[in-house]
Length: 121
Image 1 (spheres, rainbow, N blue to C red):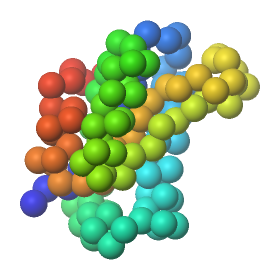
Image 2 (tube, rainbow, N blue to C red):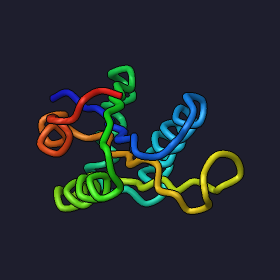
Image 3 (cartoon, helix red, strand yellow):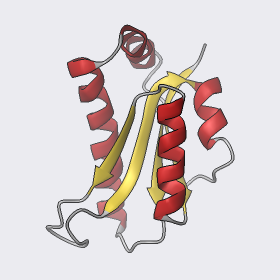
Image 4 (cartoon, rainbow, N blue to C red):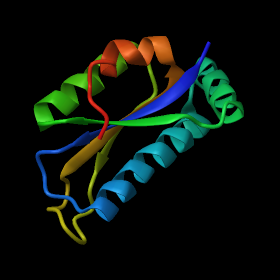
C-alpha cells in the first residue's frame, strides 16, 4: 500500500516562493516529529514505510482558510496525522497566520479521499 504525505497551502495570502517553501518544510518536519513524540502505532508503521519508499510528498493548494480548515478537519476525522502551521510573523505575515496543513504520512487511498480533488501548487 503506497504511503504519502500531502501539504495543503493557502493561495489567498501573499507569500513569496521561499516563504511558501519554508512553511511546507515546517509542515513536513512537524508531522514526523509529532509521530515520533506521540504517534499511534499505526502512524509509526506508516512513517517507517514512508521513509523506506523515498518520503513521497505532494503539495496542493486551496483558495481560503475555510477550505484549508475543512480539509484539516476531514483528515482528523479519518484519524490521520495532521498539523496546522501558523506563521510566527517575523517576515511577511502577521503572527498566527495559518499558512498550510500537513497530512500524513498515511495510505494514499485514504489521503486521496481528502485531497485528491485539489490541484498541485
